[in-house]
Length: 233
Ligand code: URA
Image 1 (cartoon, helix red, strand yellow):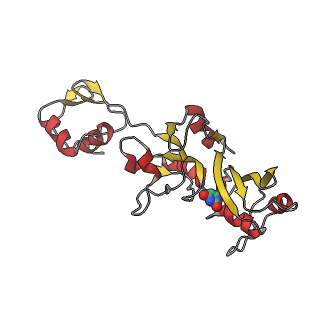
Image 2 (tube, helix red, strand yellow):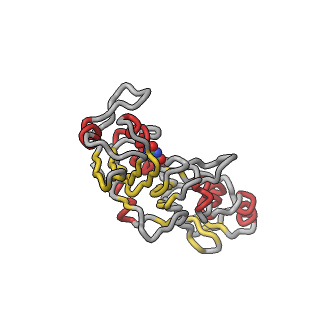
Image 3 (cartoon, helix red, strand yellow):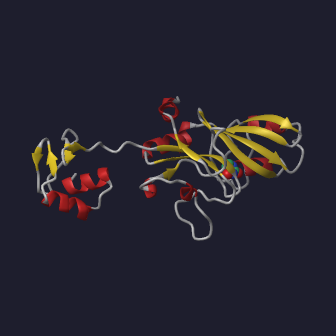
């Protein structure tokens, strides 16, 4: 990568600011002052500003407790986006690892690590997601067995993968699925003649929504949480 681009990316300075620093002799590569903005930078080189070595940017991983009314897209004309809840630099680089509907609450993961996002969302990885569901009607006795066997969602040709339903009350349950089809939970309950009234995501893979996060709050994932995604079989 070109020196000016590298410094700008790692430091958050604009290219213009970087060029000024270069001209003024503040930037060095492996201890030598460099003024050539186009110099080619390799991974092994140490670039410093005023003698301070720059650290390569590390990937960021966040969990957010999504409130109702926010959309899981990066830009929207009509609704606030989950990104607006984050007070972080370079928010435009963050990707949402598994979207929730506007009226669904709970765990949303965000990252600027594309591979990690893929590990969470790729249908091939079967990453488990657990939802707390409140329904309009009492849960029929055969729902657990039907979700275990798989149901045919409207407009689909393949039945859903086995899903685990734990009935908590007559109209409340915890559902764990390993797919992420559009409106999957709502469509699964529609397929057995019920209707979702409230939906809250509690867990993705091994990552559990932190109970200390009130709706709208977020925190960085611990290293263990972030690594758990890549360790899954
Ligand atoms: N399934 C849904 O129907 N909606 C969500 O937001 C998430 C899963």
